[in-house]
Length: 238
Image 1: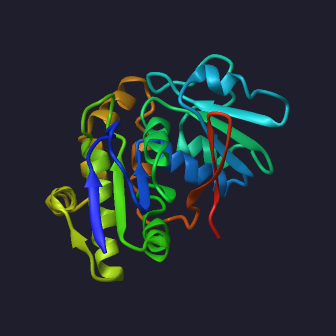
Image 2: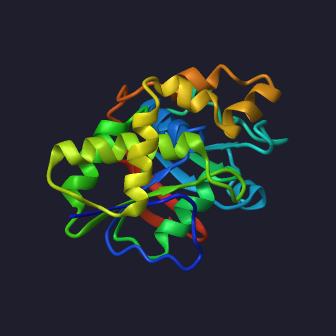
């Protein structure tokens, strides 16, 4: 089975099989937390305007601009906040700067799209391995068009665990991610050095970084289950 890592979304990329989308700081970590908190589904949209179009009393809006909760939204993009949020049985519509756009890029061609982070790394890797017939691709969201150390490190963790689950053939991107993972002994060190973490520190949300650095703490894996309009519907895989 091929193992591929793309360090950034590419408009022309084609994914023939399974894609693990990674935006560890913070969208894919927060997505797992929202489902763990009992959300019925996540609707991922590419803009704040698209998110606001879904607003009604049974819908929770979550997202960020510059790391902060947008005006009129119920939740920001904090996994700590998401885990405690009153979202049981509700639909959460989510728009973030990088992660939701990466999910849309993957969904254009992939058979299966999963949202992965350090927080659900082992569960996400196991499910990807079960679903894949020829390739597992790990798509890093990056930060505003530039590669992110945090996502590359997470891709390395996923790649390493996928290798433990069975024989894989890593392509060059996967080898790069594995090298990044091996360069850091501590997940928190790798994540803290990233531009994404530094940006959170600038807006007083650096407490989300240690949370996002936890490895394999959750079995909640968001999987693409359908679409409504321009929204991708993710539900918890069981």
